[in-house]
Amino acid sequence: MDSTYVMPFLNSVQNVFETMLQLPVQVGEPELKRTGDPTYDVSGIIGMSGDVEGNVVLSFPTSTAERVVSLFTGEEMSRTHTDFADAVGELVNMVSGGAKAQFVGKNVSISCPSVVIGSDHVVFGRKDVVCVSMQCTTDCGDFNLEVSFRKQSGAAVESSDTAAA
Amino acid sequence: MKILLVDDSKTMRNIQKGILSQLGYTEIEEACDGLDALSKVGAFAPDLLLVDWNMPNMDGLEFVKQFRAKGSKSPIIMVTTEAEKARVVEAIKAGVNNYVVKPFTPDSLSERIKETLDRASAA
Image (cartoon, rainbow over all chains, first blue to last red; front, side):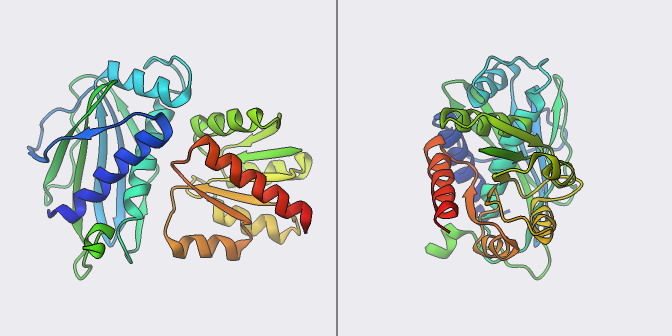
């Protein structure tokens, strides 16, 4: 998986968190994630299909998720709150949508978000694609951005960054 | 001023409701998808609608088409993550009056709302 798949998500997570939460995000070096590696306690998951297909996962430790969601919604919200999962889902929805817009000239659809809550859960993606994990550091704590993608045969993926280069 | 918020995310509806109440708009109805919205527009008769695109059951674009097919002329702002130019054009053709891409700041959404209402009252 080349960087043209990763950059749109990196840009988008920074844009979403800075715009909606006024929370700067520093993104670390991408690392390959091994199949079966656990994620954090709270994961927002979105699938993408069309010319680009795969998964995007935002995965948080509970304490980070609760701080981030409280900033986002403007009210204190623990993981047991009925709207907690909805807020996590909307965050990953905006991150995926923002990244999708950077795949220039491609027909890409995103799914409705799913949210998994529970320690030591594992998110399995497709077996035929690699998953890249990036540690994101914020004043609310660290979380992971995980991206696993492959382009459909015949579809050349070009991000807006690449197009501008 | 009656405003209908159509979004499957309650979080997003609450954020929009907060911005609208700061602008002085408090007569607000909510719908969680296009079907729910269609069932409410008759009785509520909104003066402005904020509509998400990607929703289960009936998406925002289909809702806008069916709402306009009823002859309703109330202004619609599409508030969505769909940022591609082709999507914006598709929405405008369906009858959307203005467009806000998520993520947005309170100021940017407020400006679009004011702009949309100004245009509607001048028409």
